[in-house]
Image (cartoon, rainbow, N blue to C red; front, side, top):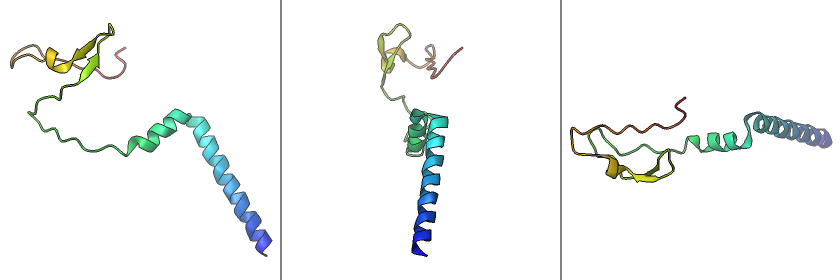
Length: 87
């Protein structure tokens, strides 16, 4: 009786591993890693009206641009930051 239970358990483990492998194959390993990390984000502390944090960004021409250099005095032209594809 114990041999049957062991065999059934091994078959179930093999099926779970095969299903996991198929899932990784379908999504791609990089996407799976991203999904595992997705829920580890934390809520930000910025509130409406706070100054933007000073970050360094890469422009389309490859130059590094600090955000505070682009931000002008109140009433100046707005700075638009686009993340992702703009096509």
